[in-house]
Image (cartoon, rainbow, N blue to C red):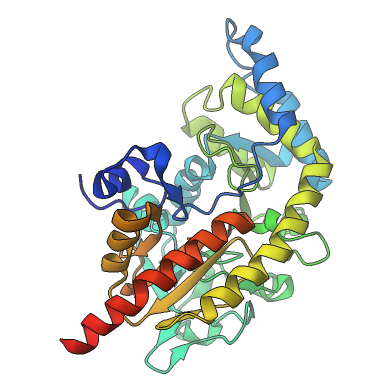
Length: 373
């Protein structure tokens, strides 16, 4: 089986570890360890009686729940089969522009997939240069200085990931707002924004009402631990979403996903629990990673860390799988990073301790071998 592009490919990892996928401790996918919440499980079970009927093509209850959650109009909401489903249609609009789409590098590999599907062109804005990263902490400045000044930006698109994957940095809302009048289209992927409590979040959802060229993508699968359900949504002005609705297949969100989304968004107790968990475990795991030999983790505002490594990250990944049945995300699919970076999710205290112990057991030997050669 080929090396996976995304994290969470347990079948591939289990093949290397020579064990059942259920025996693996998966740090490769940035999914909260707390869910799915009980409210979601109950809603999915209750929805079984409705599977004999087609889903509501307008997804009225789900759109109203999303709209209420964000204090916006339901006309500005379009649910999808995960955020990746909606990214496809955003990429179709971006690819139709006369100019290219600017995007940060390294970045989510699915952006290139979606743009390539419509023969779109893009220009990379590098976050990593020879002198290091273009930021020092997770509340970073957008590297707008890397955008060519001779480019007619009003014919170009901008595709941002905020908070950014895989670095975990966060761009200020006002920085994003300053770019909305410069580009023809701006698509902001906020798949991890839910992990920030309201007083820290930098979402631009409320700006959609004022900027017809702005689209915000959201995922419900990471925060609520239900990636298998596949549920995301886009927020944009109604004219944009009506166009996308004409392009895509009907019934892209199934009955179980719709019920799960309504329940999840109403579960404020689970949301608060998640923010409390992450505040404690983010700090714990960062401190632990920082003390290990050969590693340098970046600070992060969300539920994952990107770490540079003195030894081969793919070798480290293989050793952790074979010796400890622990699966970390290599960064071979991220442009600019390659074999000296890996990414790990933040999990429970017990599991974070297991990861740190496994790294402490494995890294010194790999460093010694690397130095000997």
